[in-house]
Length: 275
Ligand code: ATR
Image 1: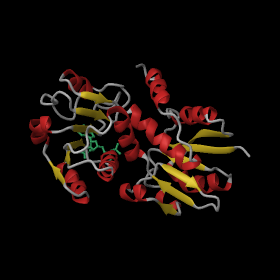
Image 2 (image 1 turned 90 degrees about the horizontal axis):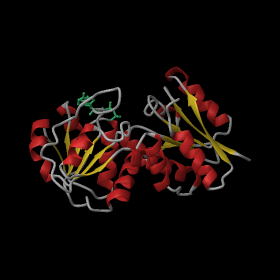
Image 3 (image 1 turned 135 degrees about the vertical axis):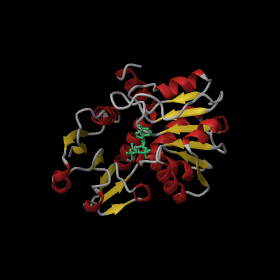
Image 4 (image 1 turned 45 degrees about the vertical axis):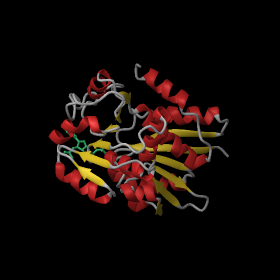
């Protein structure tokens, strides 16, 4: 029987996940489909029941349901527990709903696809201390990266996050700006620089040095001002398309045990976004 998968969120029309997963199902000759479903917060409980009862094999979860969905699931893997957020639900044969979070590991895979292991054993600076920063920092740490430093507009949030990781420290924005040249990897996880949301940069990249890997998880625009300025100083820059594609590929693997091709998808989405 044809299998079906979904993504739930509010809003959902802008999601690129349906096209990506449909493409992979076709490419892998799998009899499956993937649909976007608009779900408001008050509908979440009944939608989860409905998806399960209607035979959905798995779904992605996006804003604003990533944490709210947790009480309605049966199990969480370690990534979802660490992040207290779920972006992928897998429905097992017996109906058990297992939540996981592929965002952080998606980032690490995109980093390693683009730069190999050159950032291992180098100091890492994570800008931001929200959900994205948390997922990426845990995934980097479990992949053997670090020490990890955080800097954030609200310093207390960075301090709290740092206590949860081993060998982690916090810098004020001014301290981070002065020390930028010491880092082998800088990861920008805030919403600063996103189209229509907030212009500008989270900190001044003047001291970024040549050869540093600077990643921004934003993919719209493809190149934030922070990446442009870092690139001008000789940094190797990476936008958020790779992380988006790899988090999706990890969800696809969770459901199907097949690893889809990511390189072509990154090119395709980059073109769609005007690159
Ligand atoms: P996400 O899940 O995308 O990480 P989040 O948990 O709301 O979203 O976290 C947003 C991050 O962007 C936070 O680090 C936030 O800083 P604060 O902790 O000080 O709020 C950061 N951020 C958002 N707008 C910002 C701005 N205008 N300047 C600097 N940092 C900003």
